Amino acid sequence: GRDYLSRLLYGAQVSLLIGFCVALISGVIGTALGVVAGYFGGRIDMVITFIITLRLSIPFVLVAVAVVGIVGGSLKVVIIVLGLLLWNRYAVVMRSATQQIRNQDYIPAAEAVGCSTTRILLSEIMPNIVNNLVVVATLEMASAILLEAALSFLGLGVQPPTPSWGLMVSEGKDFLFFEPWLITIPGVALFVLVLAINLLGDGIRDVTAPENR
Image (cartoon, rainbow, N blue to C red; front, side):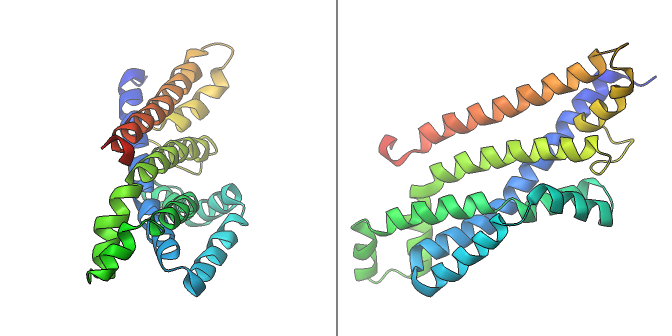
């Protein structure tokens, strides 16, 4: 008895909100760790690399399901849990990119003229790794949307009556053989949204690449 198109459109808003917030939270954490490790190196790099390795050894999906199951599923909980668990890819890519930039001639030149570490990081390092950051952000945004849909399908994500595409698939599975469009429509919407986000990331990467400026 509920309007399916309205729930589908509102579900897009929920998915985009979750994807953007998760990408923002995890991006801040991972980028900060990766840039610091890549720029300073030495013991700082060793410690941060150990933290990254520790995070990679944790089964992400199981931890997310366990935490959401204990705390309770809601929009805020899903955003916080995914944001605190999806930063590792940012850290790995930003560390590698920063190490490459660190060896360029203009970094020692900036240090020689007396630029502060903060200024070097913000004005010399970040502009040259932003294209890598955009690509990772779009990948993590798409991953967050799919993970949220999976959690909602299991009943651990966004709770009714708030519409979520994963929740709509879960609600429609009992009518799969009678009304297959109840599952097909949100499934196709998820596919199109994730594809669009990845294509957008590729386009922004091409525009922001240092060799194109």
